[in-house]
Length: 391
Ligand code: SF4
Image (tube, rainbow, N blue to C red; front, side, top):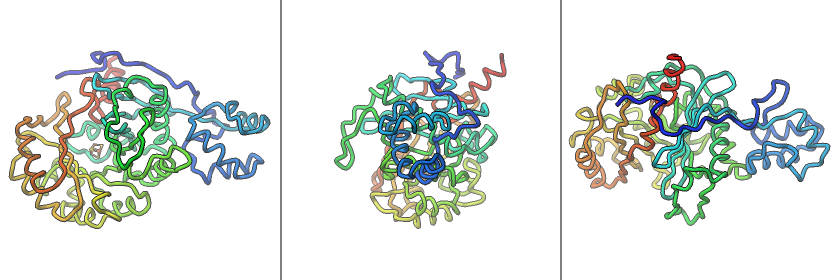
């Protein structure tokens, strides 16, 4: 299948309503609570004013200081002269027939990254990028074909979340596909709110640890965006030395891109395995801080036809993860033009899933989302760059 941007139905080209920050102004997005206090003090206000400002910026998503009505008019004027609440530009936005929304986000230096909103029955999940490109070259991943350009800053990571929150709060198309029939833990879900975050977009989040940590601390602060840590997942290809810090310092759930049950194969399809082989990876999973049934490790396993999808592979997978509180997401491969693999048949996928389920592990088959909008990680960015070069 050859697809390019021209064939995508109804992409919406949009630009941010808020201008990029002027260099002499402080951009409040990406600043943490302590920095808000310092900024308030530096502007001659008591530091508790920083907390009020925080609520406006992150909880209310307000970008216009004149609307921050519990601040004095003088203060609002000072803020307007010295600060800005920015959003990254949106190079394009695409809405799938299945409700998935994908943004191609353009940062101030022109670099692009992707953000994907995935409506499901009981949640509205945002998949956020942590880097522009990636160093890890996983063979099934389109982002792995793009060279690493740079880490995203905390502001750029939070900026992706704010773009999606603005969109969802506006009741725009996409959010109505979530029906919220099965709320977790008695919470009342809000269809106009991003409920879950997965750091599973472009890049390896544990190679950009400090910025990811800061961004997720902001996203989970209960007086701001207030997404529960139980609803945040960091996905790693297997950066073993950073996994413990992810659990203790960020305190969120962990997903591991496993995808193979032998080092021989994983060395090829997830090359970081040559550095941190399966046995070390699984030991780090067993030792993940606070791992238990309610904070299970999610193993991602992408099914590649004739490569890793046999019944023997399924049995070996069950043997390897024995004793680790875990769930296995089975992902049918989402091919792109020129991809080296094919998708396994539904029959093969179901037989694989049954073995894993019979062993007692939840094993949902994650149907590809947004195929009509190039929602597989990295595809939209590449298509956009190809289109630009062909002009
Ligand atoms: S799967 Fe993740 S870590 Fe691997 S190449 Fe793609 S973006 Fe990088």
